[in-house]
Image 1 (cartoon, rainbow, N blue to C red):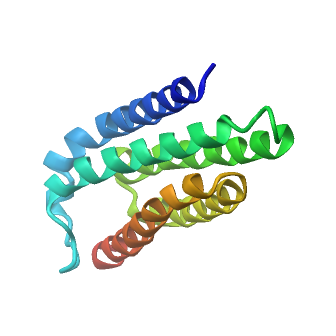
Image 2 (tube, rainbow, N blue to C red; image 1 turned 180 degrees about the vertical axis):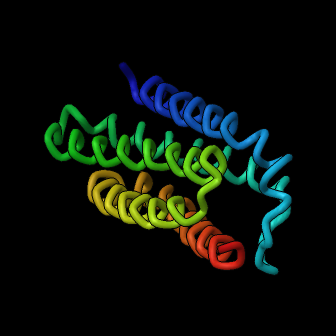
Length: 158
């Protein structure tokens, strides 16, 4: 498989994970989420879909670039892609915990684990392909912001 095909496979995978995560959130955004007290820095709801879509695309491109190096650094690439898969699963789990179970506290604990896995994935990716690592930086910043937002929502509604 060539580089473009690898990138497309992972981008589509990330977007599918994002789509299913979004399915979990849809009803709660209309019914439960509006009832929560939110901090003043809470962004408008419409911003989340385009931001996450862009982040999923960037994640997929990054992972595809790393995957493309498998013939040259097999063990390092495999390990990096395992961390990628773990952080992607934790990403999906957060939506279920926060919106599906309506549990900001549990989601707040989980988002810290997610952030650590994103950072570890970034650390591994940047050693394999600098651009792949750099593509993870906006994701790391966004999840940092989302962590503060999540914990703030939990605090304001406990």
